[in-house]
Length: 349
Image (cartoon, rainbow, N blue to C red; front, side, top):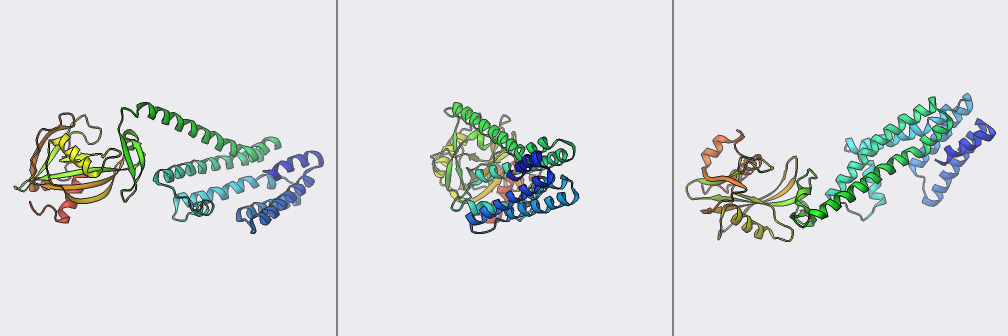
């Protein structure tokens, strides 16, 4: 910013050539100060200074300041290219810079998603700013060009970040209003380690916050698997046949405690022995689950939950296999059923 502002002031009093000379001098001083402070040449500062010298020389040679005035747009394009590499390729220069400046700091999944979102917004801001710099360089006054080149991008970023802070505070305030009535769920990593807690509505609003889920498959001795038909009022997969028991552990509740509670609440199943079967990651459009799957043999369901389950019955394995892929079962059940078949855990049927 400083060379641009110095150029405007010097040009106003002593003309373009003096303005270019002073601006280049300021740029070289900045490079020297950076080198002394960092004990090495910063590549981005070096690029900025080289462009400043080169384009100033062209402006001086052709007696046309336009070469100097397009320099901020060229820096924008370099920045946009760096961001694009990080967003759209396996090369991640921004990630390398982040690790260098944030040593010892680890981001969880939510923080990484938020960072990617902000970087994507920044990419489009930089492209818009590039266009504005070029427009003002060719078609506007020197003062307007100076404002756009020096301050506008920072103002745009400040407005965006301010909006995000206000939106987050309002969202947090609204969440706190309803938190007493709404269930808190644990947030976990891929290994199931608890990272914190989040409201159930937040976990199901597309945030892809990973949270645990328990499933129980109830088998009998007649080659049959008990399934529940989801109520038509359910938000996810209404009216489809699903695993006998499925639910969310509450924050502070163990997987085993949750499994017993859900089995009792949903299908009236008590005093059963559950065998751990699978643990896997399941993603949908609205949520991201770490599923803990159990199997119990010769289970006897009791009263079904009238609010969550339309009906329940035992299905022959052959019947299930004949109806896969027809929209009768939930995609999650079909996926899990095939995993259980391959693992051999259903061979007792």
